[in-house]
Length: 274
Image 1 (cartoon, one colour):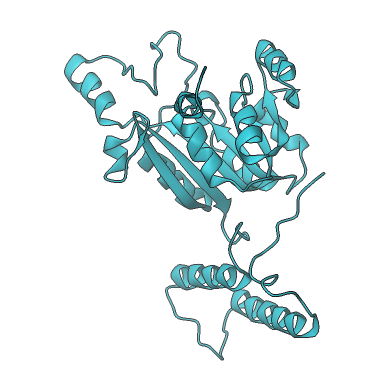
Image 2 (tube, rainbow, N blue to C red):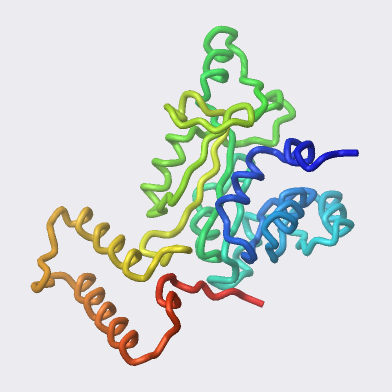
């Protein structure tokens, strides 16, 4: 008989990381869901709801056999069919390196979802560097197990590459987890980690689990950094700051006029679909 510990050990490390990053009961869209193993795991472990998108017909049938909701389609164009804010999270796990329009997909995912999950192998891992340097051959690792002629990968990115990409596209990294051999890496991940999982949001978006004031303060801090100037407390000189001040005032007036139970004001409630 398989024990719970043995079952846990059989779960891919990136699946466990993703389950830790998302809220219980969240509505998810798994883009490039494959045979649905990640979706099924999240349903069991986090009681999530949602659906997947997958191009491979055989994988779609496997999802259906598991009782999962899946759409047959290409993730590069399939996200365009969803209205903004349809899901709590859009998951792009092991997908970015396999698509040609990688520059547009993360932003579209963050339009459809309030948050995004991106997981990918790190091409700059020291093992990959060593094989390329000493043997002069394309790296083959646990995270990159394919040979050059049968690999589905068309992009080869590193952790630092992805962070630079997020900065250029206005995507905020809320959390990042780095993996090597099933264990987390905290030191020099671009060199020592085989794979990475990022929790993302669009800049200035409300973030799951943050209080209203925390969200507002993060917005103000970003404005200060961008303008390289401190916004005076009583002399708002830019439209963005004035909008924030007006918003804070409305929130405080609403708080005083509505009787709420203790603790109900502490977090932002994210709307769900369906």
